[in-house]
Length: 354
Image 1 (cartoon, rainbow, N blue to C red):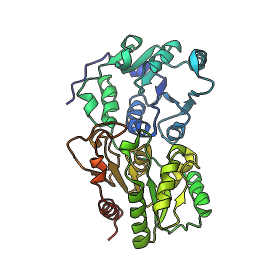
Image 2 (image 1 turned 180 degrees about the vertical axis):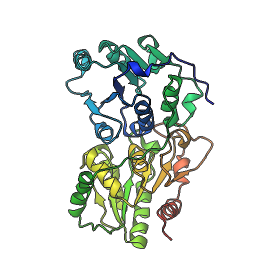
Image 3 (image 1 turned 60 degrees about the horizontal axis):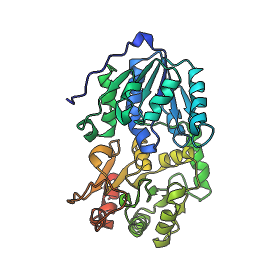
Image 4 (image 1 turned 90 degrees about the vertical axis):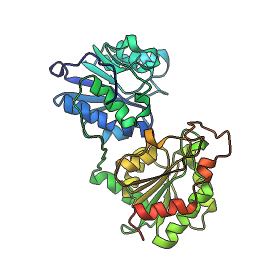
């Protein structure tokens, strides 16, 4: 049992309108979804709204416990001090009874306070404890657990009901049709074995396996499974995806930087297999239940491994890893020791191939 300081308990019958301040990155959003389920279970008759940045809002829109998504447009109309006051006025007009702050920054507490939300709960991070009415101590021990339990334990200390830690995103037929329409442009058939590859990562190059090795794995899957391979990523990942294509002998489908998050979600859901560095798209594939090979280098699979039951994690436990650094200061052995065969064999095993 984790030792989390007991906070004042919340009274369910007093809460009808809840604001959740969501996290800002895709992977972090995925890892808060069980906690949002706990909010819904504890307050089954309350309306749950999520305040989220635009680049992650689509994930909350397909979360069944979320009734409304409020977009925090920063950069945009909510930038600067004037923008924060504008956002606070917008939130105040909605009459929230309680704010649950999954984002750890002091800014989240300031906005909730300015919005006049009477109950403000979250970890006492970033010096914001005095701005919260229900503050939970963020201990060294709790920072070492998987991020899913990091958020669940916060709510548990506040008296919220426990819930399962599994994550399953389900898409409707309209969303799945988006994938069919896009893939049809590349002459992908419905029975084609589709492999998604995410060679980038937002945090930095220390999290990224080598483009030429991604290409070699893609070629082996194309040769042995007649697979069609799709390269995923944001605009910032496009150069990395281009390098994978450059090293491949096959014509890969490179959509890095060319799709919206809604389209990416639909396309990943269509994949038979997904191969990724530790990234937001890795977590998204896990939440969608796609067979997944997750490659870890500088980061810690204990705290940020993907959810789901169809995952194989490849991690070489060298003496300097996990260092959690953006750029490797040494010889990058944590990634260099991961071979093409390591990833290919894991891909074959997790997808049920022979």
